[in-house]
Image 1 (cartoon, rainbow, N blue to C red):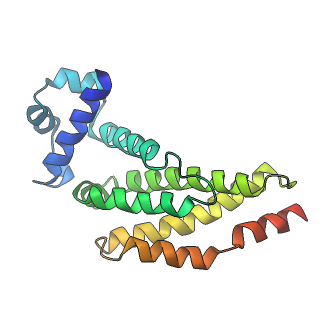
Image 2 (image 1 turned 180 degrees about the vertical axis):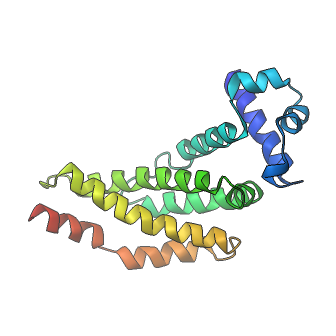
Length: 185
C-alpha cells in the first residue's frame, strides 16, 4: 500500500504543477488533491523536495529496465527523452525552480547507470582499470546530460530522435577506442 500512496502523492504533485509553479505548491495542496492527511504525507516524505527525489528515483528504475547494453543504449537514452517529455509540466516546473539541481542529479544518475553498463560490456576481456571505466562513464555522462539540459532549457522543442541519432554518429566507436587506449596505458 505504501508504494500506491507514494505514487498517488506524485500524481497529485504533477496535477498541482499544471496549475501553479512549484514554489507555490504546498503540502496541503497535494494532500487535499490526493485525499489523504498531511500526517500520511509526512509518514512517507519529509517535504515536497523529498517527494520529487522519490519520483525521479522511481522513474529512473522504470525507464532503463532492459536497455543498458551496447545494442540498446540508444533506446534507453531515447526513453529518457520520452519520459521527460511525457512529464513536461513536472520537469519544466522543477527545472525552473530552486530545485533545478534535482533534475540535473536525476539525469546524472540515470545516464551514468546506462553508460557504466555499456562501458563494462565493451570492456569485457580487456584489462582496463575500474577507475578508468568510471572516468569514461562520467565523461560521456556530462556530454549526454548537457544535451538533455540544453533540450529542456529550450522548452523540449527539438526532436529527441534526431538528438539521439546525432549523438550515435558522434560517438560511434569512440567508447571502444577509448577503452583500447586505456588498456594499452
